[in-house]
Length: 399
Ligand SMILES: Cc1ncc(COP(=O)(O)O)c(C=O)c1O
Image (spheres, rainbow, N blue to C red):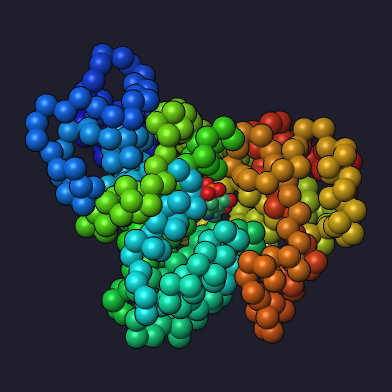
């Protein structure tokens, strides 16, 4: 097949990208190679520190032909020189942080983001002598003001979990680079269909593949994309030594999911808009956050930075805890469950007290800022691919 996949449309890239790398058989679909070890017919080092680009497959914790294809497909979609797949989004996140930071370094991070990321940054990094300053990354000036000697990484999540805040990737990349720091973007909510952070100046892009990219709620995975130079220490250390490798079976499932990613994202966004508009006029709903709504405070930036507003809608409802109880018992189509980005709709109430205390450590003005939007709790609704009318009827009944 054509090797000039970079010139093709995103739907063609999602289907064929990376698959030209397959050399092992004549199958049309990617081969699933579950072998943990490989016949080797030439001398190779036994150290993960010395894996060369043209090394044969030796051991699946270092490299595997199925996982290679997923990584190549992700590189096509993110317009990246290279990508590494991990066992989960958190394995990718902790791999980047522990792979690129050392004792004495400093990180600037969005003050609200995926709670697992926030907890690693606040608790784990602290144990290793790495400091983190949380800031409201909706204003790039806050990032500028938080930089200090030793700031090595600026970490943003856009749109962010669960407030759907947008961070200006290009502006923050310029600020980070002027200081000699790397910009890492967790682009899980956006997907490469909406935003290509590397093209906007980011150095590394992180995804939870468990979400939209895999898309079907049946395989955990994570990824990091960027330059070969920045990924090299992650491949030998974070991947091979920390050991958070993806199962080739999950890589294969996620690759199959990616084939329909552009089509799925179009439908996720269309239904999310319909649901957001329904919620906005509902008398029991107090706040609706969706980047595609003109009422979103950063709608203009979202429209500029995203080609698709994705499928996440956050909202606050009167008597939220009672609504959540009704959801658990009475929803017919939507699942009351964590996670997001699947073809099935998923909803979850994120309690403000819980998040503010255990994950974000929000206090004072930062807590007031979060509470002004989220109240006592925010429903995070991952709008799936069912008929939008059925989703709206389900919500209407429990509200
Ligand atoms: C934005 C974001 N990043 C990272 C993660 C972690 O991914 P995983 O659950 O695959 O470890 C999540 C999970 O919800 C997420 O929402």
